[in-house]
Amino acid sequence: MSSNQDYVPYGTNAVYTGFWINQDRGRILGATLTLPDKQAVPLLAALAVLVALAGNRSWHLCRLTWHRFLRTKEAHTSAIKTRRRKQQVVIRNSETAGGATVGLFAVWFDFGILQILREFSLKDIVLGLFTLGHWISFIALGVLVSQIVVGNLVVSKVLPTCGLWFPIGSDPPTAESDAIFNEMKTNETINSENYVRSCYPKGGSQGIIACDKFITRSFQQQTIEGQACPFKGVCLPDANSAVTFDSGNMTFSELGLNTKHGKELSVNRRSTCAVLNSPAFRINPPPPGTDNNTRVYSFFKDVDTGENETIPFNDASSMSYNYRLLSTFLPYQPENFPPALELEENNNEVSIFYMQDLGILFIEPEKDPWFSANFAHEFPQLTKPGDPVFTRYSADRWLNVVLCHEQYRFCSTITDNCTDFRGLLSVNKSSNQEEYNALLGSGTKPKLTTGSDWALSIILLEEFMQKTPLAFSIAGSSDLALQANRLLNDGHQSKLSDRQWILEFEFWFTMALARLQLGIFNTIERPLGLDDTKAFNFFALEGNEAIYNICGRIKFNDPNHTSLSTFGLIMILVFSLSLMLASFVGILLPLIPFVKRWRPLLEWEKRRCTRFIGL
View 1 (cartoon, helix red, strand yellow):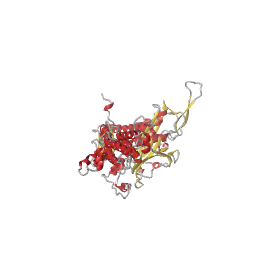
View 2 (cartoon, rainbow, N blue to C red; view 1 turned 180 degrees about the vertical axis):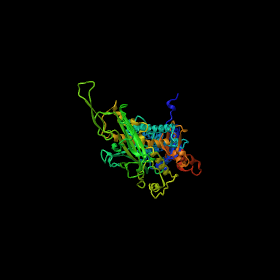
View 3 (tube, rainbow, N blue to C red; view 1 turned 90 degrees about the vertical axis):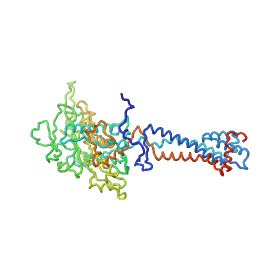
View 4 (tube, one colour; view 1 turned 30 degrees about the vertical axis):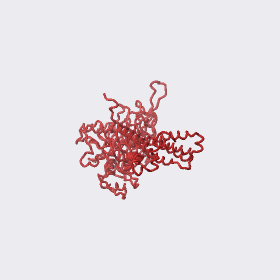
């Protein structure tokens, strides 16, 4: 039977142990040593002991200087000479600064309080403060050894199974290939939703689940309302009712990429959404054979035939009382869309959301344009026939539609330049090379090649942007993805917010950002439970050898490893060993023939006695 001790968190086996460079901090301060906890703890303990030993040896070096500093003069009184010689004996024979501090206080109090007050000199004060300060300082340094710990920050290593995995397709698709594809998409949706609910403020996290795996726990996106609708004449309730969801600039570093210029380069994800007047896209009269309970709509054309792609929606309210939610993600080409959905730029993609409420009765009228329900229905009280009737409301439209314009761009704080916004399926082509090079400016003369450190990160992000359409945020969850479902009880919908559709898409946009975070992190090793005979690794394909190295550039936090600052580690070793070597001066000097007759050294040897007899 397995126990909790057998559990290994995902990613632990992909941690690189040894020396590596955290590019965010540069080659010197960013030099890092990562070790398993079982090795890091003894190393820290050994460093603390080393500092303590260095403190002791440092005192051996200092006491020789202080012994010379306490020499007496003929003008001194006999009491001062006696006290100084006793102080020299204490300094000479104390192995630690702490022992010297206690011994010096004992010497001072041997002369009585009144004599101390009369003859206490500045030299006595400096000596006392120095010995006490030396003692306390090295105690503090031993404690501060722990400050070289960077934390649980680690970087991934290149594993044979690391990379970007896709299901093996077939032409035509088979039931098995479709099942694998849907399983992977559903797992991505479930994982991103779980992460958002646990770790993002939009998910209402209570902090019960640890959310410190990623470098950045969550991104604070903006919701900008009152935007001009990109689809002319078909937006509800008016032409300025579109809403933009913007991630802001997410730096490569915040996304966990250990790359040069990681703090200066960023990616900006944006979706502009609007509620559409769905009756404008209804095919009327409907195609032959359409029954009275079905309405047919067309929002785009078939790419191959150029014919209208028809989507039938039937009334299934007699079988269920819930929501039906579907989504489509497709590239935008003007010839494949009706004029009402024309966009200014062709290099874009759109997500279309279709929502149908099947027999749902709203307890109160709903002003939200996507959940609009204002048709009143009166029902008699069945439990109390004599009581007045009660009122419920039904949806204003057979089908409710939201269309989102999906985009992203790259930005650089080095030059304050950004690429143009582009669709999620856009990848780097030769026509964009000058634009990407402009991100770093002409001074650095970068080249966007597969071997370029920052270019590899851009290529990786371009691949993962294809996983972030809002349409994918509901893949495999259908109507359960609606937050409104939480207020649906036995076919009766409680009062919703007047901004309900915005709240729904805010959450799905947050899930898109979580998909990006999870997608990058999941490249460190093969997804759990994935059968590699039914999937292929994009990184391992011929021609992708350079991008394969990205596996070893993902930063994250791992609870089973500890990272130390290499710079701090070297400073401790150099400082401690230097003091320890220098401390042997007192032993080596008497071995030199012409030095051992030096008067201060003779006095030093004379004070070797540990008793005060005869002083």
